[in-house]
Image (cartoon, rainbow, N blue to C red):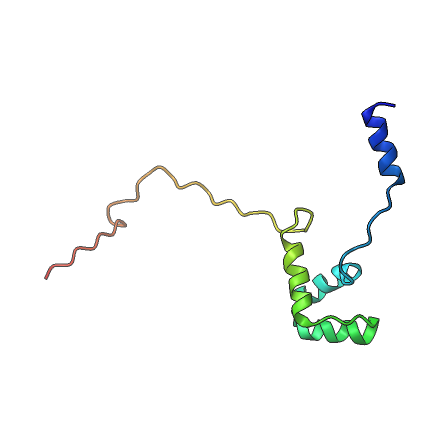
Length: 101
């Protein structure tokens, strides 16, 4: 058995680790509520009342902050600025400030 087959065999037998955060199952809900401008405190209260998940507002904040830096998170694409034109503006639009005292 070569190395590639050993690796494939090992991966098929290895158990997947459970998510580290109890909030992982609610990540989509939390993001949606933040987009609707819910406060972290209000989200924490709603999770406790509706789903029985206790988490402090700071835990929810940290949960979202960590996942905002992951490459698979959905972020708007960067806006590219148009390159400045190479022509100079007319002399009447040029502004120079000379303060004479």
